[in-house]
Length: 608
Image 1 (tube, rainbow, N blue to C red):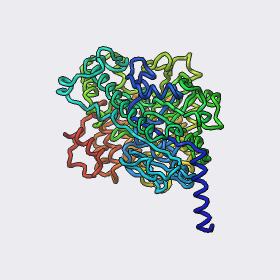
Image 2 (image 1 turned 90 degrees about the horizontal axis):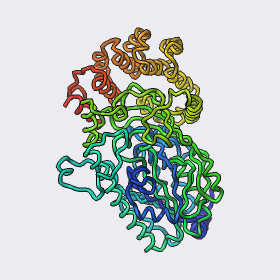
Image 3 (image 1 turned 90 degrees about the vertical axis):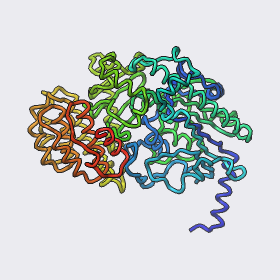
Image 4 (image 1 turned 180 degrees about the vertical axis):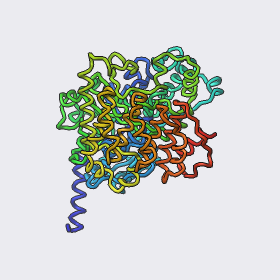
């Protein structure tokens, strides 16, 4: 063991060296505002003069992305510098906090080791267990001002003025509260109905950006008055996409594409390639941010991180420009479950819907507090939407491909156009390689993560990469013509492995009535399957296709579910079958007695 005096002397030396030779780093984070809502990225976006002033002195990243379209999963990716589905952090709201894998710490801990003062004001929302070594302070009062004299700092300043909850206004408020932004001048995307309510909602949201920008300006003035700007690299970014319907909670560009501006003072300009006022076209995402901060600070990036630095003394403009691929993920958001993975490469966006028989519109109590969501649903039920506007309420195909340069609203799916077959195949293979390499834990039901894998989710997935590869191959049978896939689906449904049966059922549900020839096997699984999750998915198939009545099966399973996570999953299936496939469930509030808010949300909706 080293002598305590030597350790103290070493710490003093590191601190002194860091203060002289390492920059301060500040993250300014605004909640829930995608790139498209800022004039910096879109002429019809909100003017943000303080952020635009940063852009004039720094570099604007045109292709910066959150890896997830919701705060807890996005922030878990940021703080771990790793893909959330590898660590078991992909569900919002979390049902359990996941342990960090061995040898893997949240990235500010490495800054503290190097002598940095680390502070966060104040949102965390991590899905992983936070160690005591992450922040010197994390609260609404946390400030870089509390550091030791001369000590370099890393500080995160969060602003919540643009958060989704700010659009939960009432009809009375809409009638009485005018907006600074003229609703007549806003653009309503092609997938949304162009109504006075939607125009008012966009205008009100843009107004919130004006208020957020003023808060940013006040904080920048504080940094200046404190005399730290000349030693501080500033990142401004949004914590995921925006809050207009079909943005937050959905893995479209409006949920993933974020604004990012990085400013370095002259002393540290060599760490940020690109001249002041320039724009960078290379692709970066949240998984890279922690690694980038460490690299900028001169701290070695741990091998355990998935992210790669995009700034630092060893990074050139050509290095950044060569980056052209990012990945995205979406799973459960509150009580609404889905499973989507995305790849954005250049101008193309590939989406893989692993439960394509579900619908984006599936009820989510928090989302539907917005009047715009409610009106959108009412217009759909009245048959008053265009085909593009109705897509949100209808099952998706297993694959989608969008040319973002021509179709920024992502309404024209090119996945079945022969002219794009090579692009689809290439991006599918890229995604599958990524899913296997990361040991994506979503190929097992969430209840497995919170019970059997919870002691070390990352190792659980890593040890099952070959099995995950087989499960992906079964899931991808849904991409073939049914006649070509039927024999392999039959093998999967009769496998001794319950998860191969599980994915065989999901692929059959993607085919719908085309797969009725396999209904007898699936009906047998609905009563004899060894895992509750496969029995529920089997009942779901029977309800989607009309092969049998799913109501008794699912009412039994929801009553017998042993934990809240299973209950939420079953209630999600019940909601889908009742709202979209016409089945009626005699569900009453007293049928369920488990204390989990997502359960209450479903029960209050299904059995008001």
